[in-house]
Each structure stands twice: as C-alpha cells, then as structure tokens.
Length: 141
Ligand SMILES: [Zn+2]
Ligand SMILES: [Zn+2]
Image 1 (cartoon, rainbow, N blue to C red):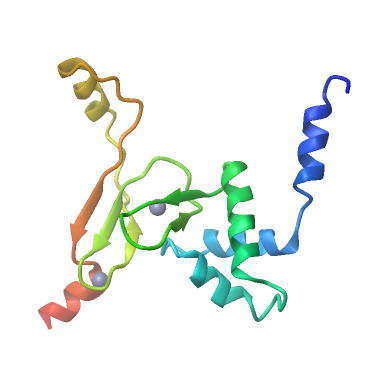
Image 2 (cartoon, rainbow, N blue to C red):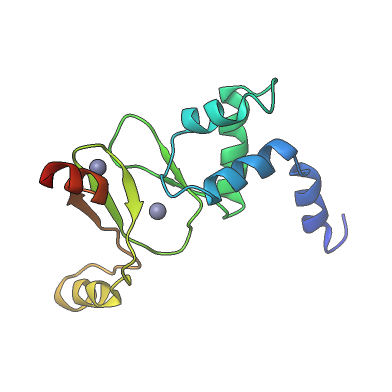
C-alpha cells in the first residue's frame, strides 16, 4: 500500500448512503436532540428496509466522521446532536425537551479549574434545568 491510500480506504469503507444522508439531514433540521428510535420512526416510511440496527450503525459512522455527537444525559436513551461545536444545553424538567442554548461557552471556567486546582481541563459541559418556553407559558396562563 502506497502513500495517500488512507483516504481512499476511508471512502470505500464509508460509501455514501442515502439512509445516512437522510439521518444527518434529519438531525441537522431538528433542535430536539432525538433518540435513535425517534430517527427510526421518522425514516422507516421512506426506507422500508431500515432497522434500528442500521440507524445505530449509520449514527456511529457519522460520529466517527465528526458530523454527529452522542450525548449522554444520564437518561435511559442516548441522544444525538448534529451541532458538534461547543454549546450548552437546557433541559426542561416538565416536558423533558433538550435545547441548545444561545449562550457563548465560557473559556474562563476551564482557566479557573487549571489555575485553582491540580486538574487540567480541556473542555466542560453544562446543562441548565428548569422550564422551557412552552411549559413556562402553560404554567403562567
Ligand atoms: Zn418543557
Ligand atoms: Zn446540542
């Protein structure tokens, strides 16, 4: 095997698939950080041979390609996010929705850890909990 073969091998391994394109498109078009089952329910009409196994396999390839992130919120099911940049989440305690927060990620937090403790932080994750906009207006009306 000569030089520059790696890219070719990768392309062969991850031949483009319409299913995977659709999964990515669906994830990019929703802000709800869905479960694999939600994705499966949306796409099974379009792809009759789709199974939970193929959904998971395609999600794992997208994760490996850096296009999708798996987030563990300590719930029973993995959630998937096509927003792979650093961002904070808001979790509604009433309806369980998970939303991206339009807030800048604060690098000072890492600096504080690095300055005040023996640990060296590369990144951090923050989840805020409370009521989403929809649940708030329901509880106020
Ligand atoms: Zn809510
Ligand atoms: Zn997110």
